[in-house]
Image (tube, rainbow, N blue to C red):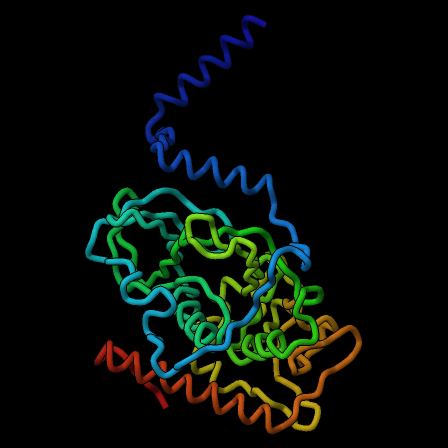
Length: 339
């Protein structure tokens, strides 16, 4: 026994004095954030009972033409200042993309996402918000220095506001929620298809409520789709269809040319939307074409009148044009359009 203890002590000592040994030292804020994450993982979010509180999915948008589609629901006053002091708080280990927690010099907290989802997610939130649905307060930042973060500099990242008067209470599913059979839910499904969002997992369907400090009704339960990064590419992936190891993605992200080339409506009458993917709870039959409305209620397919589709497509095209024009006016000489 004494020999075993002595050997263990000697081994630990040698490891500690070995070149390159660098034991991790967490700051107070990072340690607290890590403790919160560990607690959250133990308490996995549950699907919310639809009878709980006052469910809200959609609010009729007013004066859409006056909306700031560049800055989104948080407005310019809510945007992070990339020239100000931003401090690293800790790593966010949720999801597949690299993310960190940060705090700015106005004491606002952010989740910063790196990688290919940063741009499409920010744009997608503008479409969803303008159509009357709730979204996260996302901002695309080209460059920012984050004190305390390894490497320090962040480029082409998404800043998402945290603790902005809302508290997460759970999740919701596409098949069972308080809005089954409503135009509002069908509209949200169509909107997901319009943006080629192929990552419609339940874990991305959030339910939040206003906090007491917000001054809003705490009985409200706001249903929305978060994590809209898997958008504006093409749906369908051979690697995913072959069930290769590593859970390959079921489509591409931030590929405008691929997005533009992929069909949307395959035929009229009973409208079929071209949606080559399998990883979505909306398409419960797991078929090649996502039946439009885009709702599949049990075994039934819902028809959409051609007039409704035309009106919807017109609204989407108008909105897309407004977003592009707004972007060009605010960020001149930074938009390249290839034909």
